[in-house]
Image (tube, rainbow, N blue to C red):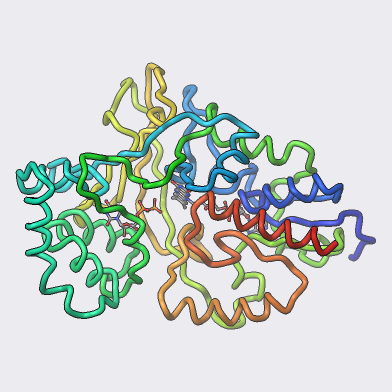
Length: 371
Ligand code: FAD
Ligand code: UDP
């Protein structure tokens, strides 16, 4: 069944890309309809309120950016607190600060000065520096050496990605800072925080004047939904959009196990990583600490990695050569189509939130400049 277009834009997916695009389009007096197959808006930044705590239903989300424009943009919808992410790693029962900094080096080797730490790292990395590192393992060894690699990287990485570190691209580990100061801030960015009252406030602000429908899977009747609007913005999996004609893109998924505990403070930190391979989860999140919560009880989430794609939710694109080659074939036909593809799944990119927002703003600016 086809209809006369009632909307300027059908936006498939109510995550950050869809919500930012819808907001910008609405500002330009475009009529938008946002649909999402989940029973809520917000995509992976959605929070569920449990016991008065904003539970990050799809994993810990900490906003960080160097871009003042993006920071001011998100703060115009909801003020952010100054939460600083300082995860702690648990390896065989011993705790180490992250990212790799003077506190970590002291805990590992008892060294108290940057010179001593640098000397150990230099000695442990020397033999790995000779060749151009071609994979995550080689890159990590040439950067931080054997102790850090074996205690804090290898186990975590291989369970997170379900692949040997020698089969993974180097850029993944480049996300983690290495510094010779006593500074446990996980990010180097100027701006960082959590929306006061939770991420749903950001999504509600973005989608305030936009018509949205949940529990709608575009693919259940793509002809009908497509016929409702003059243009389509698509933020789901790009391979699914094209019926997997060039093959399936691989994703990594997570099984989130949430627990309510009758204690006010379970682990003393929002994020504790479990870096050994024997423990099946990668990290435990204690959500109240993101907002300095004082509730009587607490909610924790264990993240168990597993293969994603058709059966399990696709959370992380696996940007190795094989998948990137497949993606390029999809990208080529996507560029020739009038559909706008955006976000982590449609651009097959390991985007953080600020990057998705930047991408949606750039795309909307370009589209409306052409109008
Ligand atoms: P999504 O949020 O995935 O939204 C896409 C939406 O499209 C979904 O709601 C989906 O249901 C919908 N959809 C898909 N197919 C269809 C269909 N056929 N029909 C209808 N709807 C459909 N970023 C940070 O900056 N900091 C962090 O600390 C951080 N932590 C993260 C932790 C985890 C575990 C994960 C998975 C991601 C994390 N991110 C973090 C990244 C962040 O989640 C993303 O950058 C951002 O949310 C992506 O937005 P999006 O709109 O591209 O995708
Ligand atoms: N990583 C690691 N040990 C840790 C934390 C991270 O080896 O304790 C590696 C791992 O490969 C991970 C990558 O660094 O996938 C990026 O970590 P980040 O915390 O940015 O992952 P995300 O929050 O996106 O899951």
